[in-house]
Length: 104
Length: 257
Image 1 (cartoon, each protein chain N blue to C red):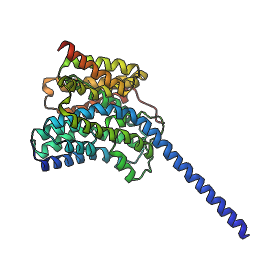
Image 2 (image 1 turned 30 degrees about the horizontal axis):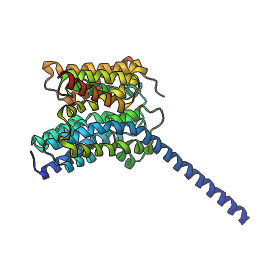
Image 3 (image 1 turned 90 degrees about the horizontal axis):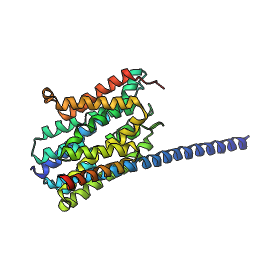
Image 4 (image 1 turned 45 degrees about the horizontal axis):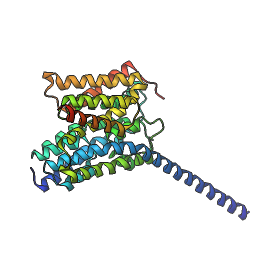
């Protein structure tokens, strides 16, 4: 466990290294890309990032792979039905909780 | 003669005022529209930031430092990893490098967003809205059909920003009141939110579905293949994203509008 001063310095450093990648491209890059390839590439970024962020990270998110899979299944169904961020999140949490209570 | 000039001046002035009012109205409309789109993100952030506050304080971090981190960092994966390292008494260099690697993916989002905004937007506005680029805020903004204005982004960022801090504070102060199994269950909230963002779009477009699935497959290989052990989570996400977007652009090129 670190002291308060070190913690605050760590928080500031983290804030800086989080901000730089966010700001650098949008501040520096002012041109509209004409190429079809780059246009498509940047269009697909959110879907690729989200996909990679979801899996396999979700498997380890609850401390138990089975409850995580159950939560993921419910989230997929709710999202498929266009239920919105909050309902999908709550549905997944409650499913994982139920699995923990009933089976583990 | 003089009267004519005076009348013309007054009329001109009136036109200017009208123009300014319509500009202000447009700003307000964009801001309020953004605010509305930000509310679901904010609600989704509550359980995630709540979990963060909980874990941080349980690990020995004072509540106010956890809240300070949420106010200045506004990021999920980076904060969880950073707090972990702080509590393990890791070196400042290790903390910075790890958080940086996890956050390099924001460069792709920032670059993508640079294509959706007015070319003439000043640096000041660009640097302010850059602070609000998170996985969710970026996703919602880039799925927008209309142009992305500064007012819209400010509206979109507002609710999630304060919800992120509020959730952290609530989690930090609740600490051990919640049973451990419920705390574990909340770990899935962040991933469920990602699912809620990507699935409705994947339903509409086979290209989007393909790109997401390719990214998932590559990231799983990078995570689970034994010889890929050297690649950190942050790099694995960046490599998967670049590979999936490259394949997607070759297989399903889009029209430049």
